[in-house]
Image (cartoon, rainbow, N blue to C red):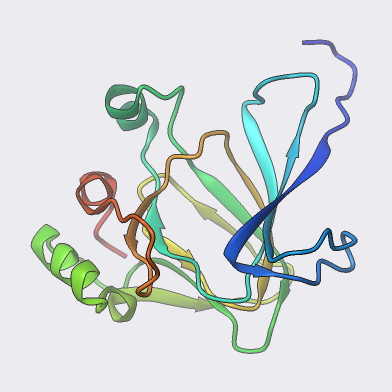
Length: 183
């Protein structure tokens, strides 16, 4: 790769929890945009991925694998640690990271299946300017009314434990295999 700076381009991704108004950062391309990825048209894959995430609803309760698990089980280049820089937060907005107290594997499984997992997570009030590091294995979720800039290892391995009744695939066993079940 050249030592010259690489100008990245924005690609817009619709999601069920996205928003229509992307101001002041972007003109809206239409639809419910949840993520804007910054990618290189010259390179297939960068080692990190920078995204803007816009939430109008809660994101799924999810977790990402570490490097060893991602390589061994998924055949991926690596796992996924991510960092969120909060750009905007509605009053009362919050995110979840980790559990209030340590729980057993079976308790986590039952809570994910019943939806009780929401009450077991540690919820943090957020405001613009805060930065959160989420190591691989951290069970987490973004609440509604938040815009973050996410910097992550560049892979899309996400294991959903709970999705608020939305009809998307869950990955309970893989999620539990990689999740840290403590605070």
